[in-house]
Amino acid sequence: MSLKRGDLAFWDVTRDRYCVESGSYTLMVGSSSGQVAETAVLQIAGETIPPRSLLEPVRAVNYDDYQNVFIDECREGGESIRMAGDSGWIAFHDVSFDEAFTAFEARVSGHIKGGEVIVRTGSPDGPEAGSCRVPPTGGRQAWTTVKAPLTGLAGRHNVFLAFTGEVQISWFRIT
Image (tube, rainbow, N blue to C red; front, side, top):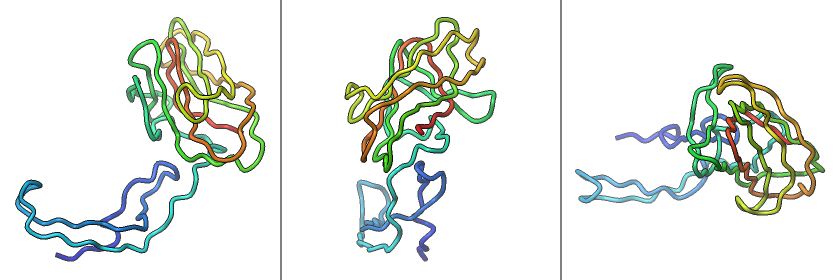
């Protein structure tokens, strides 16, 4: 068997492309995961994934962690995130804010009741950087753009978008 560098590639959601990350990779050969006959550790000289930037629109489905949401369609193109109940969140890890960032913008749907998006740092219930109301839009595929001011975003943080109500989100950015 011949192993090439591309065989170790994975989809990097932070940059929307395949990459091979530097590190130690364990190769295991056997008839099943319970019957591994041989192992070898490979050192791969790949790349280091940089901190995430949220300056350009980020597809909501490119989250790093989540709770109480699922992937749904977006008739404007691609997918969106929709809550499975009355509240939920998505996380974006290791975000770099090299300068002052003061605004949140998102493409959302508020269905019949609308809801709210809260931008937090550190954890799903961490410090609030800002929030915006999502108005009722009259349907799950009736999209609008919302904006809100933000404060306290400098340095590197895990960023959480917490949702309440009937919020569906396609993309967002922080500028």
